[in-house]
Structure formats: structure tokens, C-alpha cells
Length: 433
Image (cartoon, rainbow, N blue to C red):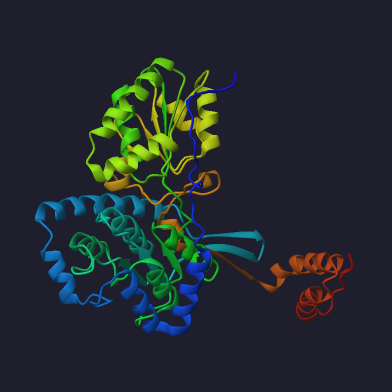
């Protein structure tokens, strides 16, 4: 039986997308040609800030002193959780080697990127958690230079809590600049920085487009769109908690989809009834986003059973996936496509967003079908090596020569021939395919 939409979205996360490519490309071109001066011109235009671009040690210390101790303790708690989880992830990448045939060794080793650029959104909110998520993982990976950048307020610069978080987590440089100009500065190595090998962190559509254009020249974590969240809930779920979790994610932005997938119609109807009241109770700045997201982008989907629920979830491939249903082990084993999953009522997306230890920089727009989120692994290059004795190289050289000639690549074949001739001058080999 087909699934039923009790509430269906009238828009998708790309319905109102603005084509910003030409604008972003011009800014990148201008800054690449004009260097520091061009970046400062754009910073003056968009950030409207004329303070130091790179914060001095004294400025960092002053910002840290302005952060209340209770907030410092919370940031330190989140940093410790993210750091320990990143260290555990790093342990899963091991240098290995294998003697594939006697005398011929192959190996793998991991090397961290030398320079990482971490973008930390500013604006209305102090995105302390983004500083923790991006800088900590780069530090644990072992990146040589870590630059944290964030848009400054006109008169006060970067929010002190962001400066404190970036400093605590291991940023080597903190840059008061936002938008495309910040992405360009880190990529091109302006203001005395090393050119970034990888750019990470969430940002607006201009930042996302800049990363898209620069990808290949520099690595990126992912191309991020509006955040999205899906909840799988059955008859055992608490409708009030489900509704609150949907509203909590809808406040991200006017075009942030939230989805409820269930096999229990009374639960779905109760959630639909509760959500408007929970949204109305939010502060105005949060309410505006949540109202639009719920009205235009939210869906409530009724399925026949949990297998159809799981299939629906995998099709949507949500950035955040919450399971509030019976038999958690079944769901954990069955689900395949998500950025991060939150199992059981006792955890929620906000825990992962802020403090629990997993990363909140996650794949959006169904890209969880082929990639995971930001982790220590994103900063690590997995490279290979090989080394052989003369005897060990013999069978490989023979096979290489014949395969190369079969493919019409005579130059390749002769690099094998010359070694066989040098190492085994008295032997005859059949090197034709």
C-alpha cells in the first residue's frame, strides 16, 4: 500500500533558491587578483568592520575575559566531548602494510591536511558550537595551521564566545571576516596565512557557493543546503516530544524541511495539532522561521509498517534522523541513509548540534545517500605506498608489461621491460599479451 501524506510540502528546500554564482565568482576573481586590499574592500562593504582582520593575542585574551565562567564551562564540556569522540574516530584510521607476493610490499598511511580553514557563522547568533565542531576535529586530525574565521559585528567584532571557543579548541589564527571574502582569504592565503588545503563549516548560500566554485582547487567538507530533519515515530512515541523536536529544527530557517514518518495515525494527528501552538510560543525571531518551515516545507507521512517507514527515511536521506520507536536495535541495524541518527526519546538533535560529541556539520539535501558528515577523517588523506625487492618485482613487471601492451600503452610496458632486463639479464620473458 502506498504511503499517505497527512501533510505535504508545497515547496522544497531549493524552491526559492537564488542563483548567486555570478556574484560569488566576481568576488572571488576580484580578491584573487587584488589580494589583501580587495578582500578588505569587500569586508568593508559587507561586514562594515574596520578592526584587525587577524586578532592579536591581546584581543583574543580580552574576548576570552569577557565570557562568563558558566558559559566557558559549557563550551569546555562540549569541546571535551567532541575532542574525545574525534580521537576515537582517528584511531579507526591505521597505517597498514601487506606483502602481496614475496618481496613486494604495499601500504597505506594517513597524513593530515597541512592547513584548514574553519568558517563559523555569525549574524544573529553566536555559533559557538560550529567553532567547537570544526576547529576541534581539525586539531585532533593534526592539521598544521588552523584558521577560524567568523563575520564580525560592525562595532564589536567577533562575538567573544566564538573567540573563546575557537581559541580553546586550538585555532592558530582567528580572522574577523565573513562571507565570500573570508572563504577567498583562507583559500588564497591572504594576510600572511598559509593557503588552505580544506575549507569546512556551515554558512549562507554565498559561502556555500564559494566553496562549490573553489572545490578541486581546495578540499571542502561538503556543499551544504538548508538543514533538514526527519523523525521516525511509532505508537510508543510521546506526541508532545515529537512535536517539540520538529519545531526545534524548523527554527533553523524558513526553508528548513522537517518530516514526521509514522505508522500510527493518531500520533500523526496529535503532532499536527500540537505544532502550531508550540511555534506560536517561540520568541518572534525564532517563530518567523518555524512558521514558514512548517507551513511550506514540512511533511507528515503515514506508512503501513516500520519497514515502509525505514524505506521512506532512506529515500529522504535526512541530515538529522531521530528514532522514537520501539525496538531501537532493529532501527539502528536497518537504517542506511542519514547524516547522524538519534536513537530513542532520551536523545535529540539539539544534543548533537551543541554538546554531546558527534559533529553537527552534516550532509543536507539527500546527500547522506553517499556521504557522511564532518569528522576527523575529512582532514586526513589516505595515501598508499609500495616497495619491492628485485625478485619481488619480477611477476609484477611481467604482468604490467603484458597488460600495458594489451591496452596499447607501449611506454608503460617498457618501464617494466627495462627493470626485467636490468635485474634478470640471463632470463627470457614472454612480455607480449
